[in-house]
Image 1 (spheres, rainbow, N blue to C red):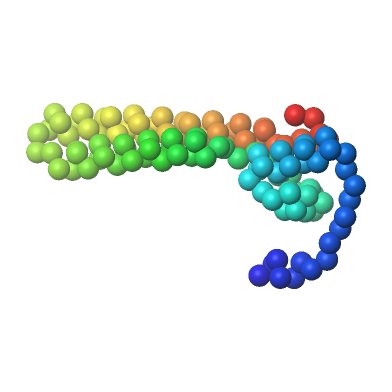
Image 2 (cartoon, rainbow, N blue to C red):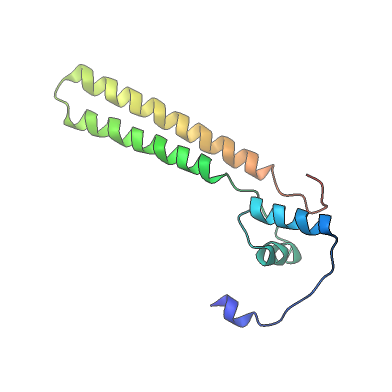
Length: 117
């Protein structure tokens, strides 16, 4: 385990504002302060991740897509099958577009190391 090998500490002094900024940026990236600073030191740009609420929303959308796909599979009426598959396809496209938007905004939304938001 990598943590067991990490037995040396590095102490730095920061202002209260710098500490708050570092903690806030680490939280945006869903990293500990240590891991956030370690990544910066290793020339890795930590990226801000989507909130838990956004991830949960996307998961709910996926559940709805699955529900409509099950309706289509269990239906015997051709009109219903087409309807359920159409809705599932549209929801799936919305989900894909949303994920793409999040990915692109995350790529451009790197946490700025210079301290500016």
